[in-house]
Length: 250
Ligand code: PEP
Image 1 (cartoon, rainbow, N blue to C red):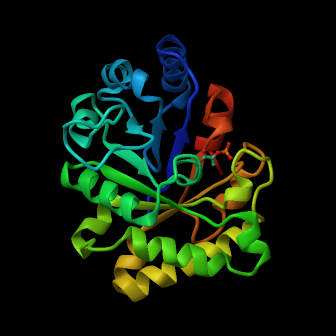
Image 2 (image 1 turned 90 degrees about the vertical axis):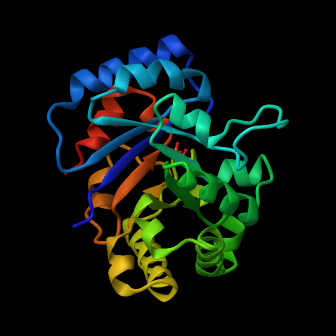
């Protein structure tokens, strides 16, 4: 009932030429996929070139972040209007690197989410606890709080355009994946939070991705869990063969 979404977050990697090369390899290796969605989120500089290349293909284009204003004196920022203009249909918000390196808090993330939805973008809202928070037994409280804060003023009708990505911070880029049981347990907690914010039907319809060192050799096990509806992939999305294997999870 929930179509899995496999998304690649390329972070600050790849020139335009390298991005085109990777996407051409993905397109030629992808085959006919109808039961899952595929998304790539390259750096801003490659969006325009990939927007043309991905038109009418099974791969969607997304940004890694967005600013909450439409235009104005905001040096270095990119708006939802600009992302739509180059062919994006998705944006990530609240990635842990934005939260930690750029100091973004829940309120700013919620503003970004509303701006993106308001311009017809779909949003991947990232949440996840740090190692210290997990060790202190606070993981569920932190993640539940981030889900609640990220969804402030979101109407039930808007939920269809939101995907939640559970990404434990200690698993991102470390090779240290959450066990499938731990990931499933947190996904079930997130779905329970959605039920209490909205209702059971809405919560069951929402997709919750797992992110954090997803690789070809652990994707099948993760995706076999009942509440894991896709993957947000960093390092393993930078090479066509590993990303294609993740897309073709069994
Ligand atoms: C990410 O960038 O969101 C991520 C999960 O990275 P990695 O797969 O490299 O851990």
